[in-house]
Amino acid sequence: MTNTSKARRPGHEQQRVNVDFPVWIINALDLQAQHPGVTRQSVIKA
Picture (spheres, one colour):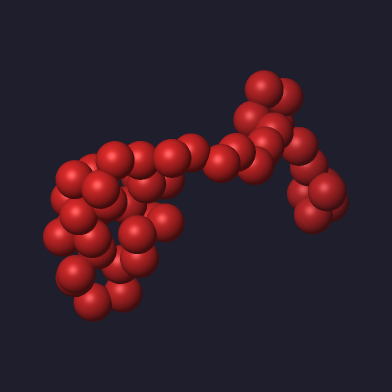
């Protein structure tokens, strides 16, 4: 059996970035995030 707990996918490393959005984009993201269980961050990542 293969231990996949520390497996990595080349080219899929994560990197944190900061992005400034205009207010109208934030408002549009918040509209999408009004559904139960949906956060602004999950909308951005989708």
